[in-house]
Length: 447
Image (tube, rainbow, N blue to C red; front, side):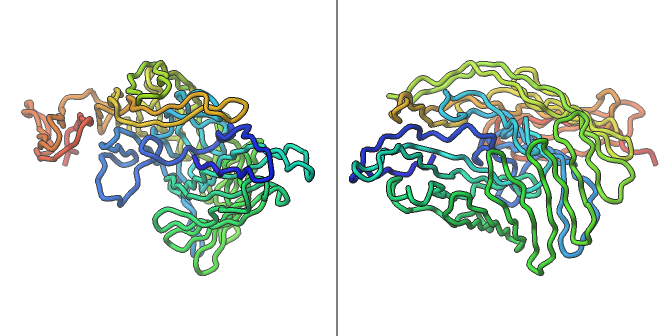
């Protein structure tokens, strides 16, 4: 967390709160909260709509809607799930660290999101006493930090912005007029803003598309417009309460309309399709105990963890076919996705021991650190992945056994029983722990 130093020259200052305010926001992108990022130098496991990161055992789902092409720029839309961020160990405001989830955010909860572009930040505040003989009031100073951009594919990026949003006349007493960080980004993505009480943010991606965001309020904010490098512009209207969004494309059509979020069902309309996508919701709960190695001099890390979140139970397509989803009762993560064909992918979850690091603190009413946390802790991860191409009973299994780091694992095909159809051939791959995949292979199509 970035904390601005408060100058004490000619004033009596005390810090009321240095921790971020309790806002409904996207978490900072990290190993425990980041979806898979294509092209980062390593590969993933996965199928048509799902991806598993073998480095940390996280799962991502992307179910793309059929979007009508626009002139010059077409905004993709998908139903996205990311176990990285569905539940994660973090803090809400000045609270003790706990197993938390994204709740009450615009188009995002429980690891699921309707993948429109989003921008979020957190707000930190502290109070200072005005200098004697000039201003005897207690002044509240504020700063916007932890900006996170979710791109149209559902991937999240830390923007590195930090803006002093205090009342301008109070800036000299809040620690000076700077240094605000008004330009940031990640990789080819550039973010710019200005120093004011409600600064808008402009983000330019690697393709030259420009996203214009108003000042993020207490919830993540959707851009009001997106333009390509040729000036083709689509507009987006949205509301916070109730949550809704509508995209008007470069041809003036309502390309996609999201009138509700979490209503069970949500009816998402897409231009050119005769029926909407219907999304139903349920609740996933988690309760388990981890181990933690606390660094000397820090408060012991809480190890009994629990939480709950609203999650998607099924998505009905415009052609009335559907995807269904069930969740692990221990860790609250996605356990099984059934495709419209009846085929499925199923995950077994366990703990990746001492795999993650957390640091944080809580503060008393005078801004003095009351508890500091720094430790390594166990993190939920996929240990086994089962895939069936049909709903038929499993007969043939190919196994990816994890032996030792760096050692090749044999993808074997069992002996073919009488009258069976041809199976896939054997292959050799190198797979890092803790992932193990069981592939349930159906007989080849009849000729």
